[in-house]
Length: 529
Image (cartoon, rainbow, N blue to C red; front, side, top):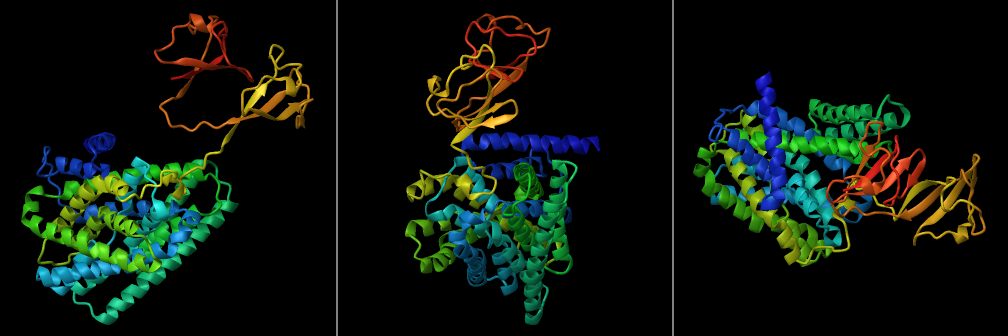
């Protein structure tokens, strides 16, 4: 057990370090996670043998549940509404067009069987939301014409469609008839949608009416909800990923309590899930087998990149009179990633017999796509003049918290305070500061210019909000009776380099210090670093 924990800890630490390095070396972090997995694998530095497709499928499916749920949870319907139809068509009709074109290329160009050609087209037909938005968010690239929302909805919702096509492909490979295929499609869509809506509305109803013991229990509750929406749908033959995605959208756009902690929680869970998926995919891969399928994978990628994806995008967007640069960017942003490889693993784990090495072909396609398209996406976005300089891509997500232009602070008027005994109109206040209310003896007073401030008043003052765009941070230091700064003045203490005492909190009073301000026991010093 100890060795397993050491291994898991080392992997996560390696991947987090790789994440930090990704911006510096210009390589998408998800690709680095995969390379870390290959480093630990049978052909890597540590040479750990691993070929358990069933185990990998189960773990990756659990991770995809949380990724899909959070993908839906983060969809901001108010921002997505203008592009909802277009993105919906891209994630459905666009996926089908892409799959059928790739199927035709494999059948005619590579001489594969129809069932195997259809299966490969289905597996690589969806774009990867995690790959696309890890790039957009890390570079804070907002896009013109609501393209960020368009890509978000498309890449987040096309996995269920690709999963359904993959299930059809597996059935065709096993000799299933047309009537069986249609029954599968109906069950996938019907039960996926029914359980997605039912579980979501049940969860929202419960969250609004139940008082849980702690905020942490809400996170546990929604973890169970996301798992239940997938499991119930899958149990009845429905599309579990469609169910999870619908469930996430409904809950994420509902008025529930403590949404910000929930966002932080699922953001962390999703980040860990991405690490686990991409590491396991790299860990499962045998690099010595990749040269055998390299030429085939490159041909399929080039066809997909230059023909299949653009054809699907232009077929969907041109009827909506989309601009050429938008169509080109949406085509370029169709990265293939974890979902495609996980679907390929499902094919192998399900016992499907194929003449071609589906897993390694899809693995190579995903690596090439993430490495090439992911690395060049910021450059291509700027070259196509698609950057919205006055926007913020985070606003298209539910995890974005809109900043107010104002912050509120509390000021206590003490005996020595320079405002004590003065009229509001006579106070020398900084620009843009405004006294909103005065609490005096339990009564709230809304001040005018002739309102006199008295000792004991508690003021609510509005100040301009600070937009955190620098590396400035604040740290609190409590002065106890043994602290070396006790009873010294600010000018007498030895502060760390590049730091400043920004304020002294003494009881309910905030003091803006100067060099002669004395530091007393029980003071809290707020240092700016």
